[in-house]
Length: 121
Image (tube, rainbow, N blue to C red; front, side, top):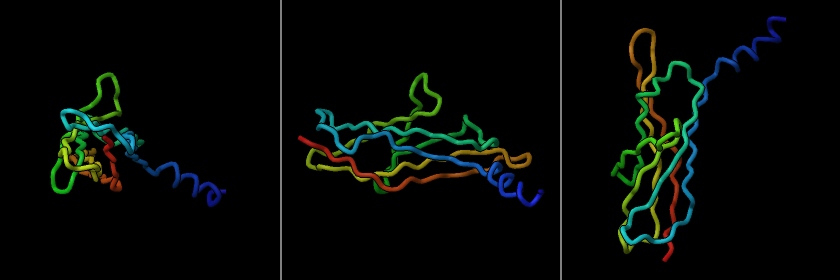
């Protein structure tokens, strides 16, 4: 009986953290050349320190800090500049965070796949 329950026990101990990009793949060109990037964070990691979550939009080697959306505990946003002569933006989201690690703080980081925002005139 124990061997039958072992896989269930192992699966129930697994932690899962997901970063979901909420940004559309297309946007109309804006007069100020700033474009909104949004994401949602979900984690069942019990040791996670929620106050330590710090996400960034990464464009090449440039990083743009994201801010928490008011009244939403797991959504973040940032406005990213795109030059007028550019018709798309390649970016990914990187999230740094801390967690409790047997009496000390551990550090973790997640990086998403690369996304493309097409800018239409």
